[in-house]
Amino acid sequence: MPLGVYVQLLASGLSTGSIYALVGLGLMLAFKGTGVLNFAQGELVTLGAYTALFLSLTTSLPYWAIFILTILVAGVVGIVFERLLVRPLMRAPEFTVVVATLAVGLMIKDALRIAWQESVSSIPSPFADVSVRFGDISINAQYLWVTFCALAIMGMLALFFNNNLAGKAMRAVAQNQTAARLMGIRVNRVFSATFALSSAIAALAGILIAPIHGIEPEMGNVLMKGFVAAVLGGFNSLVGCVIAAFMLGVIETFGGAFFGGLFKDVTAFALLILVLLVRPNGLFGSAEARRV
Amino acid sequence: MFRLLRTIGPVGVISIATLVIAIVVQPWLGSYFHYIGMLALINAIAAIGLNILTGSAGQISLCNSSFMAIGAYATTYFYTQLGIVYWLSLPIGAILAAACGFILGFPALRLRGFYLAVVTLGFLELTQVLIEQLPDITGGVRGIGSPRPYLFQYKLSNDLAFYYVVLAITLVVIFTAVSLLRSPTGRAFNAIRNNEAVAQTLGIPVARMKIQAFVLSAFYAGLAGGLYSTAVGFIDPLEFGLGTSVRHVIYIVVGGVGSVGGSVVGAVLLTFLPELLRSFKEYNDFVFGGILLVCLLTMPKGLAGLLPKVTGRLWPRSKAVDALGTTVKAVP
Image (cartoon, rainbow over all chains, first blue to last red):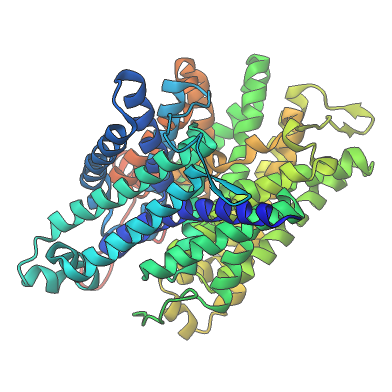
């Protein structure tokens, strides 16, 4: 096979991995911040994509404006989601959290299906029809744009958590809510901000994936891949999650190209089981003490 | 007469009345009711299966519909492709599902809570993919037909006839599940759900019991799947997706987590409800999700939890009083 095909597969794999990374980061942020693992995160991705679709159909705004507006709307959605669903669930048993977030996810999916029917649509992207050439090799610019966005988000989050006061407050709340409250941090606001951020990242994934895979109610199925990325990354490291997601995306794409679709679909689950059995704290995580 | 009623208790009276309706009144209802009745009972079996694993042993499972799928496809394959007698194919399907439960039980042993939910969700997606990718056995996304079996040269093509078969199997399932949950095994499940560490110190082999819960739960779900394929006559992967698993969770949450009777009531009620409210048909997932949320937030013990409150008024029992004069609660 010519070198160009390998490079194209790599670009495609990295862009797929970037989407997984964004979903995984959103899950991880919310889980670390509030202790609620959000099984409706996939539907937040779908919701973001449909928001962008709605904006592009009703207004004549350019891609950039839609891009930013959608992320802002998603932030508000995240705040509402946190107030209505997450906060009552914060102290509930894990079973209740899983089932309630799943139920809300199904409701969102069903509402979107009723509103838009099954048709697959897309939003125009300035990158979708452009290809970047390196000598003989050409790569779709959307792939590069997706990968760039995921890396940029990771970098911004890292800066935010290390240097920004609000970011440090979020980390404090994740470590110990009571202590954080005693230090004068408004814990409830931090919860809202966490979910606003998580939902905005999910919506970003939705906008980015739309020109590649199209917008349809089932696109929330990417949730599972996000879980795998977060688990492989150890559920507590930004870089770990992104590296794991890239790995998963590249393995899936190459595996799918060489061994067929079955291999591609089984990879994620096999990796998940393997990592949970061999290294339960992820490839990059550190062991955590558990209170009995 | 009154004394007899008191000895049977409120639950007994309700069960007997329901059973009489299920056996005697059903033939007079339309054939549509025979069909829905079958589905309701099959859902009840699946819910009982999930209830053993999630309600009793406390292990979150989102792949109950996958075990159902394994039972459904295996039964269909053995019956139609290999030509094995249906009454043998059905248990073989359930046993195969139980074997998959056994295999899934091992990774699940080391996991709890959210991680277990994620792994069972992964297993669900894996089964979906396998069904789609192995069209030689499963018919792929186009689905596969599953004909009705013969019982002593008599073909059960009539819905009412097959309804009675399903009813008989359901009664056996209810009886075995109730006995199981009252046995030391059931009490061990309860102990594991309440506190794993304490259960371990009490000498309960936690790992073995958890695997047992997975196997039993998968067996019942597989049985439900085998019956489902025959009752409906056609199966495709869409029938066994996440929506179905969540619906099973809804049955046990509405009926009452941990209660076999509750699972049956939840499954039967919520199978008939959307049929009665036809206009909701299109909004199925939406309505079910709403019911689930309301139930979770307002009555965490489900309908089974409401029962003692209602019957306590209509049916006052002589209360046991201990030495200090406080009322001793009967063990449910």
